[in-house]
Image (cartoon, rainbow, N blue to C red; front, top):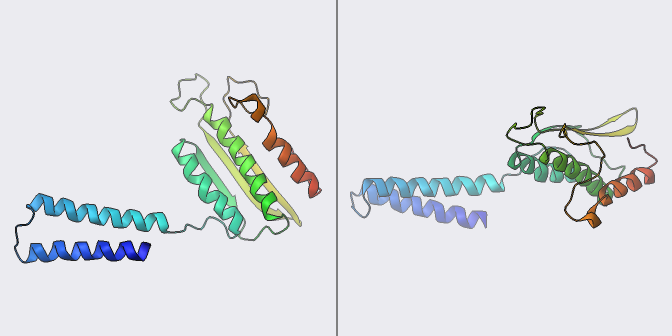
Length: 184
């Protein structure tokens, strides 16, 4: 699809340039400039959206970060991450997806409850810190985040539906227990 679109963009640009060079007044100068700029912008947008950024060597961790980094940007949450350049094969892929997604979703949710405009007198910036590495043959996953200082810290979600509360935390505890780990 990208190659197909790229060829169409290049063909369009070629025609626009040929018309300008031939002195054909098909478009006014501003229309031609705007048309060329739109074509370049569209081409750039297509390229950027398809460029795979590499955040981590591990394929699953990279995919999760590829989702969560723009989500944090969109929500005005500073996302500071550091992942060891290794694969994390000690966890089954579905468990790794569940664990990381639930941890980061809960952190994002907590940050969402901090007023982004600084209207709270005890304002803290929305921030998540994520670390994943091996040390002494142990897999360490650390997630920390700021919370709204005016909220009582309960580690419970504040989802609209009470039936949705606590599933992610329970799943994470089960995954950690499955691998004989500790959760704090």
